[in-house]
Length: 96
Length: 289
Image (cartoon, rainbow over all chains, first blue to last red; front, side):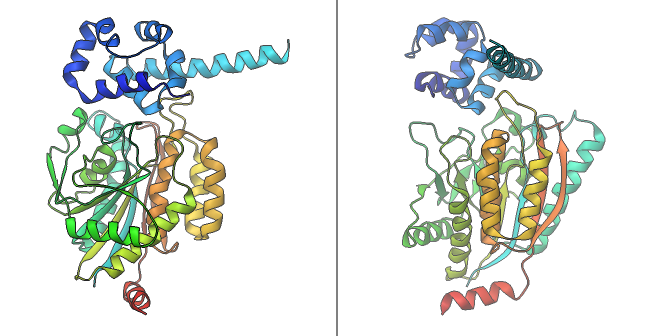
């Protein structure tokens, strides 16, 4: 399910270097300009890839974490962890 | 009358630009050789303009206004905005070809296609990495066709084949003498920003290549329609290859090279389509009948 305002924040950060600079120094202040749901606000502050991932286009997600300065290897590791967690959850469900 | 003089396709992963100087030399040489071959064949075709079929990586469009297909009909377009492109492809303005762009748009509308139009597009790494690496002269006029390969729902493979045929029809019906080449960019398999990021699906890539080589459009359509949702999201860019394939009449595919490129996170693919010297003429003749 796409979250419009989360996507809009990511899109704007990609297009506006000044906004991206501001985001680096005042994340909460920039987030508050968008209609971001409280749980997503926290996910942004926590760099919570797994929570944000299903809500935005995958390419925008990648751009966003580049702007956040997350090394690509870390970003990939967090994405892969989602897969492992999903597999683990499925396995647990199968065995009750 | 205009004629199609060359049809090509190449991968465009952004790491090709971002990591060009730092990637292992042998791998860079392999990528360079494939792009050079595209450049060599393109140069030999002596095009007057190049139609570049590529996705838009959230540079022109957003989810509040996202065309399935957009044709650039301006006299000029903007060069790539990504910071990593500035050092390798520093062209701020790229030449367009308004007359052919408008003709392509009108041909589309006359044939019940309804693309979006733009008088000035920003051409991101998707268009410009192959232009840079293939050494396409920066003053060669471009007519961009941007295809939504990024955000579902996307144009069907059947429709992309039809777009290719339409593109060929537009070339053949253009009243001025013009040598037109086509470059589809992107693919082959890759996975970006999702749980499988980094996965290169060689099985998909090899099957894909086989289908292009076989030239059976229905089989290609069936294969991609079924396989694309099962592989990495970047493979949706195969739509741009399919448009090139449709423009070639679904035949003549020639693989220049394919190899998994974990260094750039893509299944790196490079191809051209054989256009017999007399074929463009015969197609022109048929369209006049």
